Amino acid sequence: MANRFSDWQEDLSSDLVKSKKRRKLFFEAMQEEYDNDLDVLRAVVKVIGLKEYSKLCGLPSSNISNYLKKGKDLKVSTISKLISPFGIKVVNISLDLVA
Image (cartoon, rainbow, N blue to C red):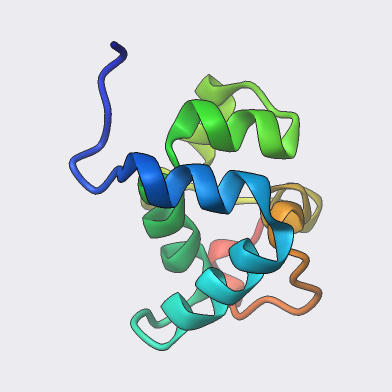
């Protein structure tokens, strides 16, 4: 089995992968715990699993891993691709984090 984040939960991951509505609700619930949506995204990807999340957004897992590193400047188009599996339209990300 591939290395997994300690936050990865197989059953929850499976439910989130299968249902866009559940992904959106989970993302929105996690927003209450974090300052910005990029931090929420980092946490949610750990729960879903990088490999599974990669399939959801159609980006290579190595790219996603690089995008989610702290201190990484992201383009708005990249953020949109990363957020797309959640059906979220508006994101709360500090302008300092956007290139």
